[in-house]
Image (cartoon, rainbow, N blue to C red; front, side):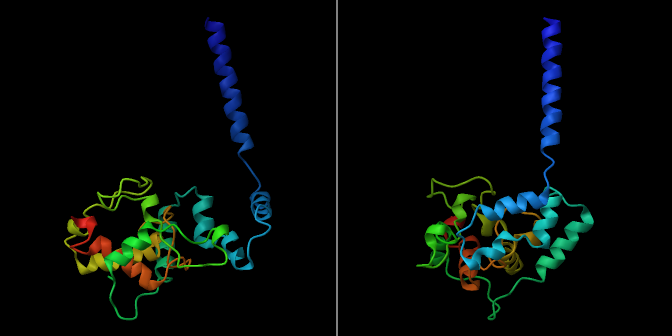
Length: 204
């Protein structure tokens, strides 16, 4: 029995070493394979196949860059945020709920576009108790504004997180809705509204 156990351990160790060795891929080959997987992608999509400096750094460090790099990401991404010209960060929470529910946009089936993109926020977050279908990749956002006393500083911070989450959480899994022009400034303001409005379902 002991011999069998030792044999199993040896096999597992060898398999693990082989898997680690196999995991060392040439980045150029990976990029080439990725690009050839989308031969019919519209020309406007080509920039999406090329990672920017933030994505390169996050990928190279498996989303765990050193402290100096974290600060670098936050600084560079902060400079990319475009703020509302009227200085207001909160829109219409009912419109924001519609944006949060919609998963439309940026899919092959959505080209050419026939309506505005959605945020698909429920895919990762719980926003209201009435919605039973939501993802858990992101934290629950129930009582979001209430927990922050609906402060103006947090309204701005929330706008920034939606526009470019790397400002708050470098290498976040959350899409950069503003930087990547997935959503408009007005749509982002509308998404801030359910989170930071006293009468929205989020804060009931």
